Length: 262
Length: 281
Ligand SMILES: Nc1ncnc2c1ncn2[C@@H]1O[C@H](COP(=O)(O)OP(=O)(O)O)[C@@H](O)[C@H]1O
Ligand SMILES: [Mg+2]
Image: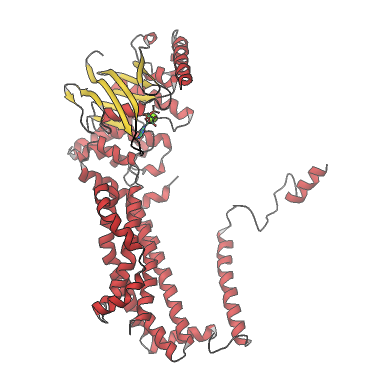
C-alpha cells in the first residue's frame, strides 16, 4: 500500500444548466488512490461524490485537471476501471453465469477461461446455487452480488462503487460490507467506494477522503489507524476496538459541520 | 360496548372467519368468479339482444336476431367464399404491418440510442403523426390505382409514425446505468447497441407492436370500406346495398374475433420470447 494507482490533480467539474448558467459541482480536488487499497469517499449528500467517481470511471469529463491511472491519462470509460452502481444493473435477459461472463466475452476472453473465472467469482460472492437463475428471480442483495462478481471477473485494475449497498436493508448491507472486506483481502482489489454512511466508511476504508459540500472539495484525509493496517472482516469485532468510537465521533462532527454550512 | 357492536356488524365476528362480501377493496377474486363474471356479462348482452329482436322492440330489418347473424356467418363461410375475404384482410394487415415494423423498429431504436439520429428524424416523424392517415386516401388512390398498393400504403402510413415514436420512447427508457455498466466493462458502441440496448428494449418493442397491430386493423377496415372490392370491409359494404344487416354484423363479429386472436397471439409470443420476465419480483 504505497504506489499510486490513480491520481487526481486539480480536478474541477462544472455542470451546464438548462438556462445556460453553470454550477460547480467539484472544485480543485486532488487525491491519490494507492495500489491494493480501499479508498472511501465520504461526505454529505450532494457534495460531489458521485461526480468524482464518474470522472474516475471516465463517464464524465473533468472541466479542469488531470486524472491518471498509473502513467496513463484517463480518457473515457474502459475495462480497467469497473463500476458498480447503486441501482440494480443486472442484465435481466442473461442468467447469472452469462451476466458474470459478459465483460470477459465482449473483451474476447476464451470460453474455457470465462467459465472458470465466472465460477470462481460467483462462488466468491456466494451465488453458486443460483448460477443458472435469472436476475429477476434474485433478491436485491443477490443482484448486487451479481454486479460485483461481473465487474471483478472482468479483471479491472480499480473497482469503483457508488453507494453500492444504499438500496439494501440493514442486515443485507452488513453482509455485503463483510463480503467487500473479504474480497479486498483475498483478491487484492483496489477500490474506491462512495458512501454517506459513517459506519460503512470506517468499516471498509484503508483511507477516508472527506469532502465538504458545495462545491465538493477535499476537507480532510483520514487514515483509520486504529485498525493497525489490518482489514477486519467482522463487524462486531471492529466496533469494539479502541479508537472506533473516537473516529465515528470525529466523522459525525465533520458531517454536522458540513450540513450546517449549507 | 357500542364500538364492539359496530365492529361486529361490519365483520360479523371478532374472532371467527370474516364473512365474504361481494365488493372488497382491491382484493383479488377467484379464477372461478372471474370466469363466471366474464361469461355472465356476455350472456346478458346476448339475452338482451335476443329478447329485443324477438319481442319486436326493434326493427328486425335493422337489428337482426343473434341466431340469424350466426346463421349468415356460417352461410357466408360455407357457401359464399367468405374465407377468402378473411384471408385477404389478414394478409393485408400482416403485410403492411411487417413492412412498417421493418422500418420503424430499427429506426426507433437508433433514434432512442443516438441523439444525433433523433435530431434528424424526430422533427419529421412527429409532424407526420398529426396527419390522420385516412386523409391520404384520395391521393393514394390517385397514385396507386385500385390494387393492393393503396390499401397497404394506408396501413403503412397509419402505423409507422406511431410505432417509431413508441419504440424510440421505449429505447430512451432503457436505464442509463445499464449502458454505463456496459461501457465500464469495456463495451464499444456496437456492443452497447446490440448486446445491451437491444435485448433490454425488445420486450417493450413487442408491447408497442401489439398496440399498433390493433391500430392496423382499424385502418384496414377503413381502407376496405372506402376503396375495395375484396376483404371483410368490402363484403360489409356489399351487404349494405342489399340491406343484409345480418351479414354486416357477421363481418363486425369476425373483425372483433380476429383482433382478439392476434392480441392473444402476441401476448403468447411475449411469454415465449421473454421467459425471464415471468419471474419478476
Ligand atoms: N448531470 C448533472 N447536471 C447538473 N448538475 C449535476 C449533474 N450531476 C450532478 N449535479 C450536481 O452536482 C452536485 C453534486 O452531485 P453528486 O456528485 O451527485 O453528489 P453526491 O453523489 O455527493 O450526492 C449536486 O449539486 C448535483 O445537483
Ligand atoms: Mg451520489
